[in-house]
Length: 67
Image (cartoon, rainbow, N blue to C red):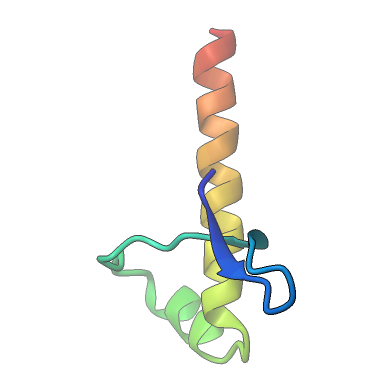
């Protein structure tokens, strides 16, 4: 996975920030009303959605590789 880099002020070297590089375009989906309401009430909904989507994609890729 690609990471963001920032320049260290002391050394001038670029070091990884530990954050992934984000895509230019967001992904949008429609959800059932109850799920939409629950997600919209989360204070950290973007972080939550990134985490669960990433986990699901990695699990699916792992299943395909082992099949």
